Image (cartoon, rainbow, N blue to C red; front, side):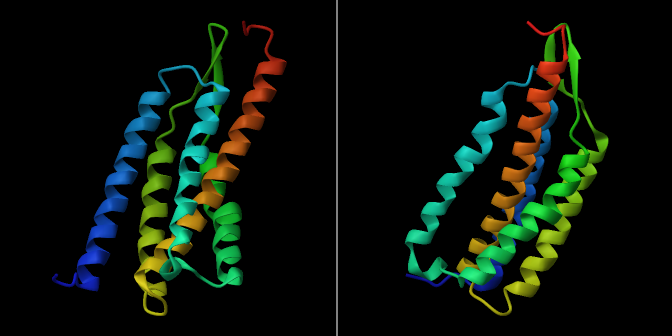
Length: 164
C-alpha cells in the first residue's frame, strides 16, 4: 500500500479546514433566519464531543500539559472573538441570532491563525498529535462560546416579556 506524503496530509487538512469554515459560515447565516433554541445551542458541542474517540488510538496521544494548554487557548483566546460577535434579538416573541459580518471575518482570521500554528507545531510532533491538539483547541473554543450563548439565551428569555 502506498504511503501518503505528509505534505499531502497538510494540504488535505488545510483544504478540509477551509471547507468546514465555509460550511460554518453558510450554516450560521442560514441559522439566523430561524429561532434559536436551547437544543440548537447545545447540539454542536455535544456532536463534536464524539471527536474524543480519536484518543483511543495511541498515535494521537499527547502529553496532558500540552492538551490542557491547547484547551485553555481555545477556551480563553479563540472563543473570545466568537463571543464578541454573537448577539441575540427578539422578534415576534422568539429569539434570533443577529447576522454579523464580523463573524465571517473572525472565522477566516481564526482559520489563518490555525493554519499558521498548525504548520509550526507540526514540525515538532506528528500530524496525528497536531490534529489532537487542534481538536482540543477547537473544542475549548466551541464549548465556551456555546455556554455563553446559552447564558445569553436564558437571560434574554427571562428578561423579555414578549416571549411565548
